Each structure stands twice: as structure tokens, then as C-alpha cells.
Image 1 (cartoon, rainbow, N blue to C red):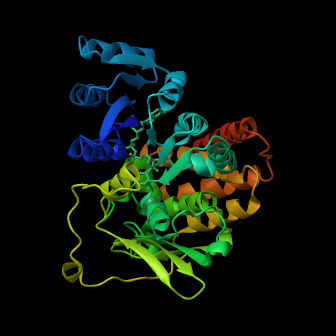
Image 2: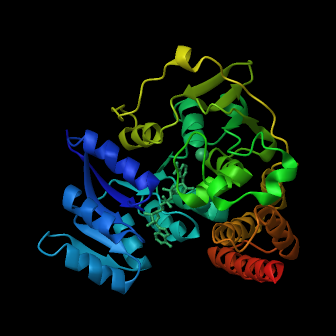
Image 3: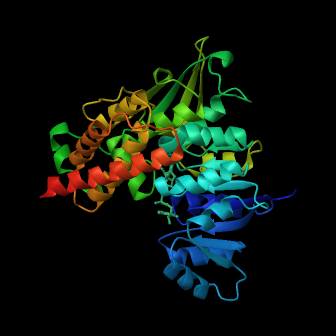
Length: 393
Ligand code: NAD
Ligand code: MG
């Protein structure tokens, strides 16, 4: 079997590490050509020694020098900067690109992979939230293959008819049902939410994830971003996407058909399952996950999300309805607000308040080009910072 050649963007993060774990379990199937990382240079160096890629990319020159020194004699070439990230996403010898950088920084390399016609394994949901229309156009125009890594969208993908081409009605699909765990504050008394600390917010009951997405899960902004992500991935209208809370995180999402059938994908909450699915697609490979023991789990429960508790979920539907640059504004403001919250510069409730205000201030921005979206992103960050600074004073 000829191995699939991979680039992993964001190799040092939670998704990156899980991806390398699946790769290591299937060495005859996958070969690592390029890795990128940003903050944990020692970890990136270790990954390079173990997986022997041709290239390793970091964003800034100081870190690149440090990494190159650690990798002397290893044969790994260290490259620097956003252009290098775009380059390793588009290398001719690479088949599949895992896009697992966190936040808006992941957009340009993911787009480069799509434009190079790669199999794009998309974990970076912010790409679709910021620039869904442009990204999906790039995938279509350049014959790229898009495989979702986000567990919900991977579950939907697996529950859709094979060869789904973006026409829900033609395939008899009535609705997409995204499941949500409800995060750590699903049952906490609403009046105590004002006092939530970053440590409490990142302690997710079922999943181990990066800090930003963990806070997004606590506010349910993560589910809001996922509704927007589903809109673009599956060409669904907002009214065809519903959210149901399912605290056990065993059913990862569902597709409802016109005849009343509901198809679901189940597994233990371990990102190696969707990662292995997308890496090997259409084959199946071992992912190292525990087999599902339904009798041990016993009960699966479901509830409707309380939008007073989770205003961020409403804000995401509002942004989707507003169209234009609204979802890019929402995403950028959210990145700023979450960073400020993690840094103790903004309260937990201040996150949704900030997003609401930024969205009101920047209603109706155009989105006719990627430049428009970059400008909307910058404007939203600047207003968010101003509001966060004022809230603190
Ligand atoms: P993480 O914080 O653990 O890792 C992020 C990676 O991106 C790291 O390798 C980091 O070095 C790199 N990075 C950070 N900032 C960067 C920048 N400005 N430029 C270039 N590289 C940068 O995050 P994660 O939890 O692995 O999530 C990655 C993406 O996958 C996010 O978009 C997240 O929403 C999505 N996702 C994650 C999970 C999960 O279970 N962790 C599930 C679904 C989707
Ligand atoms: Mg998810």
C-alpha cells in the first residue's frame, strides 16, 4: 500500500497530537511530510525527531532558530512564517492536510490546501465561520476533498448518504441535529455564572481540548460556531440545523430523513475516532480508542438548550441570519473576548455581552471578498478590545 503523505498544521495542539497518535498506530498507511507548531517548540522538535518530516514550520524567526538548533543533523528543514504554512499546505507530494491550527490564523493555510486540490481534514472550524462561502468555493473550484474533523460534523458526514453533493432535499434529508454536551455549566445555578473562573470554564466534563475551544464549549459558542460550520459544510439553511443537549457525548450528531429515520454516529468521546475516519477515508483503521460499552454507560439523555443560560448560541444564529460579514465579526470578537477572559481581563458573562455589542456596532458589513472579511475581523477585534478595556476600567 502506498502511504498517504500528510501535512499537519497545528501539530503540537490537542488535535495535532491525536492525529500523530493515529499515524503512529498505522505507519504503513501514513507518512508525515510537514508539521507546524507555534508555542511549544520543544514538543515540535520531539515530534520531528520521531516522525522525520521534511519540513517544520513556525511563525516567527526566533523560534525558528531555536527549533533549527534543536534539529541540527536531523535532515528536517525549518521554515518560517505564514507563507511557509501556505507552502506546506500545498506541497505537490502531499495528499492530505490536517488543518488544526486554532482560530483565524488557520484560515490562510486551510485555503491554500483547498486551492491546491488537497484532501483537507478540517478541524479549524473558524475557517468556515469566517469565510465559509469562499472556502467552499475554493474546495469546489479546485477539486479538493473536504472531510470534517469536528466530531459533530464528522458524525453528520458519516450519517449522510455516500456521495452527498450539497442538496439536502434531493437526498431526502429533513434536518441536521447537532448534539452538545452542555459543557461544565449546564446545570449550575444561573445566578452563580457571574463568578465563573477560567479554571472552571476549561474543565470540560467529557473532552480534553485546547483552552480556547474549552471556553467556547462552556458558553456554547462552540455549538454556535458549529451551527455556522454545518451551514457551509452541508449547504443547510439555519432552520434545517437544530441543537440538542446530550450530556454523555456518545451520540456525536444525527441526520433526520423525510421518512422519519434518524441516523447517528456513536463512539466514546475521543477525537481519534473522527481523525482516523478522515485520515483513512473511505477505509477504516484502528484509532486506539476504547470500544463503546453501552451497557456500562446505561443511559443516554437529551434536553433542549436554555438560551438564557447560553446566549452565545442565539448570537450565532443571529449572525448566520444577518449574513455578510456577521459571522466573521462574531468569530473575531469571540477570540478577543475568550483570550481576555482566560487572562482575567473579562468576566465570564462579559464574553456574551461583548459579542452582542460588537455585533450591534458592526451590523451590515459587506463580504464580497476575502479582504472584506479580513477587514471585518480586524474591526471586530479593535472594538472588542476597546469594550473589554472600558469594562475593566
Ligand atoms: P490547541 O490550542 O490545542 O492547538 C492549536 C495548535 O495551533 C497548536 O499547534 C498551536 O501551536 C497552533 N497555533 C496556535 N496559534 C497559532 C497561530 N497564530 N499561528 C499558527 N499556529 C498557531 O487547539 P485544539 O484544541 O487542537 O484545536 C485546534 C482546532 O481544532 C480549533 O480550531 C478547534 O476549534 C478545532 N477542534 C478541536 C477539537 C478538540 O477536541 N480539541 C474538536 C473539534 C474541533
Ligand atoms: Mg465539536
